[in-house]
Length: 524
Image 1 (cartoon, rainbow, N blue to C red):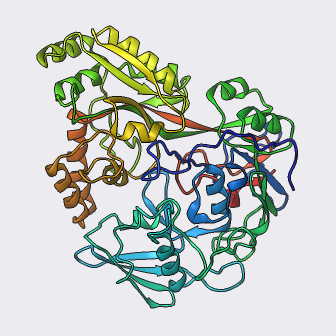
Image 2: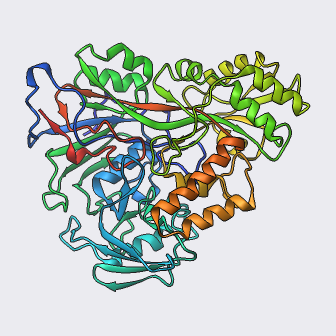
Image 3: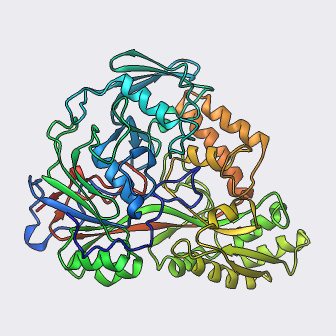
């Protein structure tokens, strides 16, 4: 199945999810109701059955696995989504949407949740049961393993949780958790058959495609599962091939060797958009871009200095220069367009005079600060240079320091004072819990405030969604005024497809349900 035109080159794809495993981890999405149409096939909107779609991704080499609980790279997640399902997944606004779970109901105190499974079968015809769900979650939570979703499942007391029927589970939680459905949708929280261990020879899932073959670092082939609970895919077969260099993916798409190329850069998109040879799909709001200020040390332990830095940033210049215009400006808050986002706050704009005044009040005139960056992510080095020039106009000297691509995310978690940062999509609640609480494991801004922690616990204990949203808004107003994240933009994620590909969802940001939904795609 492997084609020598897709050499397994060495550069690894970006990590496919955010959270505990890596600060810079980023993931992706797109698929459902297509972007562009062929000029001679405008009315070809009715899905056609049949054919094989070949999709090119950056991969992880010979160490790749089909174990869905180990999925880290985009290629891993695309393969996992073809073969397996989760109880829930994230919609376009990062709210939890039911998948294998048909419904969920909390008790009055939000510390016990009853989950009812829909009728679904694994590829061997056996039904998906509560026993399979508990086995999957207990496997993920194994303290001897480093599975992606382990931290996300931490609120569940898995010893006390139990099956109350073949298709019903009572989850007992360690504390009230209003956003428990987000746990069910966690990255990597796939449901596998009870007892499943060896995933690379003949994995059995409940996803839309069944296993045919797998050559790590090269190719994976899957065939339509006719009894899929949401309806059989349109495609007969799906092949995911590894092409690590962007140029290899683009050339394969242009040459007709693949029909879908994942992760294209803005320059490539501009060169081909509207030219007719291939279609460019932009997934908006997929990646937060910003700078991290350490709030527990000088100079950023003074909130006036942090506010000055918010006012130094010319966000449009950063989006245009660091992202080649492929994105939208940010407002120092995570999750633009997501559920609970505080979109009523005024858009912050550059104000160098006010920035200079604040720095003077803080006794930080002629401030010198080191900005850590690295070529670990697209646009990081450009953003650092642009911000250095912007800061100079406010009398601030920034020394840009290049870090190692291999250890950057570990180095900047506790070290330094100012750094380049990014994140893939995740619920705003998850961003707060993983990065902004006193005991958060990836708290890169060292934002530690007991009253802020208490607001988070209040939100999690609030049943009424409107009241809960009001608590999240209070928290975001505080971060907007004096937080440590200078969030200047949200990058597009770019995919290329052949002109005959239909059904690729364009409205879903990274990390959501409708990315890599190859069961919804067809060939016109």
